[in-house]
Image 1 (cartoon, helix red, strand yellow):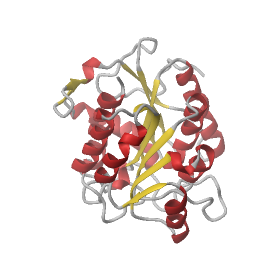
Image 2 (tube, helix red, strand yellow):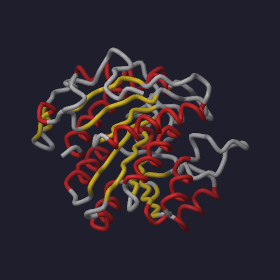
Image 3 (tube, helix red, strand yellow):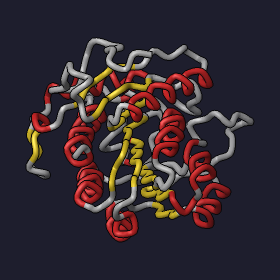
Length: 289
């Protein structure tokens, strides 16, 4: 698998053509084969890139410009449609190569299950890894209707692999009774809110490698309707950006990140895609040092 190959034509604004010199690599994971409600997030990465042309390169929040970060956009990985297991293998193989090359992996989903092979590979490199998970849904099921490969299971898999006390969940407002019980007992579980509890725990993560995974449905549907499983009662884009900035300004060492579950077909206004692209700009500028 060639790491410096562009798998699709459109790219995130100001991305470089020079893989070798890049600090970070953006790659799309266009998979939505296990969704339990509305499909369409496989089209998210491409559309996020397209609307990124409307962004300013400069972040007034961080006083930094995209011109100051060298990042390569590989486009969307070529995944076998309908084959979740093989698609996850391909994602894992690709990210393994990025990490071996010393690149910061930045994934665009796709359903949330695509984060699982990425976390596995990051954990191999950083055995003291912590995860910050920002989402409307707990994703702590062992299986969904008998299927362990489901977008409702990646964080449970991650918790069992790295230890639940290394997982920090924020904004959760949907899940089964069993998931909430598991979360409160086994992980650092902060339902409903994001910024305030996040700021309180960030000192615990000082110096540690951290993987940040954000499901766009943590936002209220009034802000981001373009997602497969929208959930009322969410946070604003202002709060989510503030949370990202808090992580960026903390002493945690972010070693990889993703934004998942943008499904453009459900948002003709394109506000979800626009919010996601700005979020990604802030994450690149805040996390890639």
